[in-house]
Length: 113
Image (cartoon, rainbow, N blue to C red; front, side):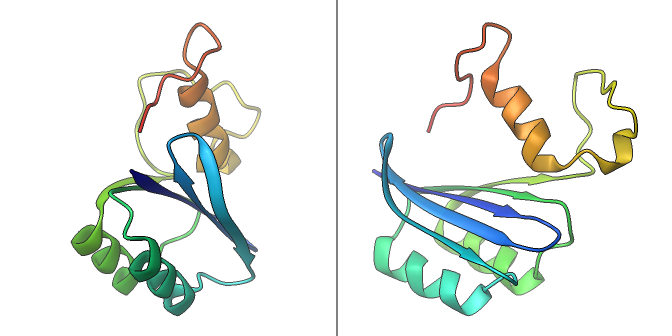
């Protein structure tokens, strides 16, 4: 089964396709790269996708991913069952929060595809 991970930051969008734990293909773009991503989704037809974003994603991209994958969207504003003690909590990116949650309480990956 192929899965897709997308991280939309302030300056770059990073995408990666995985088959189980093996990386198949990865890219980094200076924008949200909606057209490029749609082409890659059509190529790989991932079953699941996870999207982490610190900025508002392109609505067309969200709609496309929802139609073509089982999408889990993780916005930077998502309320979580953990206390954020970062010195400026509003500036802690969704990608870093996802890493904390993914590590789980034991340091092992808590999120499985």
